[in-house]
Amino acid sequence: MLAVKGLYDGENIKLIDRINLSYSQSIIIVFPEVTEALEDTIIQKNIYALAETGGSFDYLNDPAEDIYSEKDLKARYTNE
Image 1 (cartoon, rainbow, N blue to C red):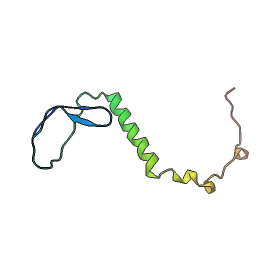
Image 2: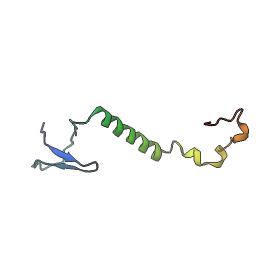
Image 3: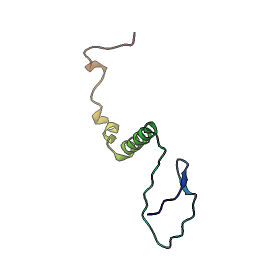
Image 4: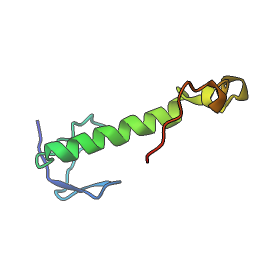
């Protein structure tokens, strides 16, 4: 196992140390200073991105799915 330091700017990873390998290698990237709140934020952003691109909510764009109106309400609520 080889460990090297690097920097992550939110989009790209740049290694600080030079590595001399002549072949492709799978890697594991560990962020040792990630706080739990930041980790939760990253997970939430990934979930939102997946939901937006995954097609789970595409049915909401179909006019046939828009079957309810204000007339269907039993009671109308206000913020007053």
